[in-house]
Length: 536
Image (cartoon, rainbow, N blue to C red):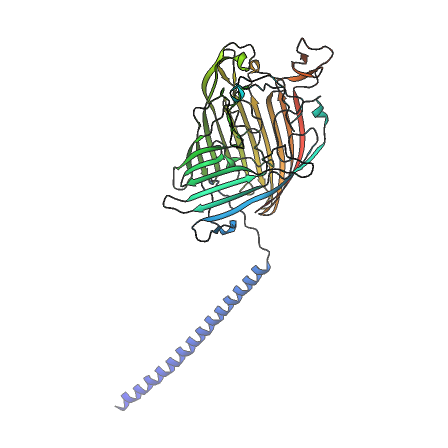
């Protein structure tokens, strides 16, 4: 028994000794772990301190896939300053920009400040101003029309007025956008105005008293658009980065017409989209008037040109992280009717026509474009190309509209084909600096034997180099050099004050002798243009 007690005592002592040793080891482990935690916390603090002291590098801006459309009228985004109208479910945004454009033309003026116009300056242009029965009567006569603030053929008085400086605020805009959810989908509206309502007729002696005008006014319900906006074939998201407020030579003008438009999203991500529209028609025929609604609501009715059907347009768009591509087409009907009167009696061209004019033709054209990111340097750097072709594109060109059709000696319509293209490279140096290099060309195949061709636009070329500085997202400064070259079908001669056409430097026979040609067939102009724009 004593032996058992002896061994038991020894075992108990050994157990107590072992437990003490384990406790000491555990304490040591805890101390080591705490030291490691303290070291990690100190390292974290050191890293945070270094990050706070170091300058923050600008995060490269992500490339936005250009999928926006007029249907996306207003995305409720607090950054845009939108707010919900009290007592309603409607979100409202009021925005726009203040624009002051300045230009200095080293030659004669291409157009008003911030707005390039095609054609030729007075007194270069002699065109036919006949109408098929103005206001229901058989009125119409040949006459001389003079352009305003356009490029001048050499040798004319306008070409000698070089070195013109201009400033103009008329292109400032204001817009009102709303977005309202409904059981039929979001209902959006847009009303956009600028101050170019008086064009170049505004009084500039005491104040630039320009008038507001509606640019766009439409409503969208889901994928349906009703109202006035850009013609469907124009694609603002592949537009070149010009400083000019007008569209660039060689691409669709961006004219704004009343229309009904519908969009199909072929896939949920909206990478593939299809559009169709019916748009307000207009008969652009040489020597033929059209029916216009005047500002007071009255209608100037030209019975010679009657529109039977709207213009029909279709468009396909493909979007991706690589950029955007589109192709579009237009189908138009042009109609004229002299009510049984002969061409001579109706006062139309060509003179001497003894056939009544009563004809209708279908015409149109196609256009397309693409914006492709280069993946060189900034991810927003891109190449841009646009082009159009067609015998019915006269009214679609805002740069220098030329009628789509003329009337031949048999009283039938003949179309005038028009084509153009532009190419550009857009370069972002960083978030605040952007530059663009652009070239565009347009050509018209005029029916020269069926109309007065003195000073008639034949071909134009335009080059622009610009740079934009954007110190904030609301402030934009732009500077550009613009070169313009235009060619006329024929120049003009001056015989005792009368203007007649000449071809190859030979004036038409039968005029007063002693006076020779005073202009060439082509003109060149250069312009420096500056823009200050503040958006809100």
